[in-house]
Length: 231
Figure 1 (cartoon, rainbow, N blue to C red):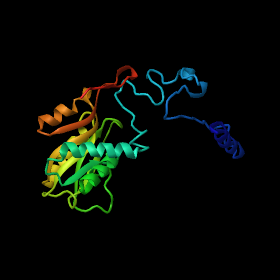
Figure 2: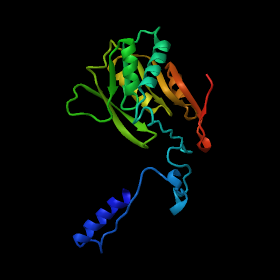
Figure 3: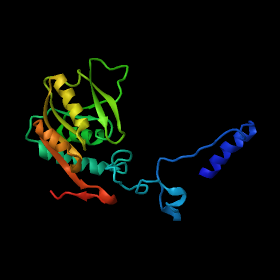
Figure 4: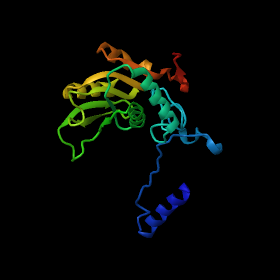
């Protein structure tokens, strides 16, 4: 199919008389793979980088798009919600908070099980937002800074907030802490679906007095092997 569509592009360039002075470059965001007998070393694969498609690599990025970040597993989301309820049931939480987009599904399930409203901070300020609170967060996965916003109408001084997300360096969590402080709300704790312990986000948060609860703790991602901490 790919060859066919590339051929269609070349055919159209030729029809318009542009084929002699046009450079066509094809690239992919998936990386080399071994499926179907493909040779991942052909054309020099990923240069100096290691790993194939659907593998983790030494940069410490863990792909979770098979069950939460792109495709979702509803049964797993329910189990996550049940465990967060068990861990935070004794608190006075009255609102669940997350940041788009990976944390939304488990946050909704947790809110549903606890019969509480769910609010999420947005990574881009919509034109319709009013009374916006904002902060800047650095994304480790995307390696860039972005503005995070939430309306003060939905995060108020009377809210006791439980935040859920993923934990690496703690950048997103620190941004959420800033928004909570700006709003006058209180944080009862932070529940993380996956924590990468080797990136020290927990230490930063606990030094600020934050209660941290992680459902799965990754100790190491070296050599394309996932090492999970026993709890």
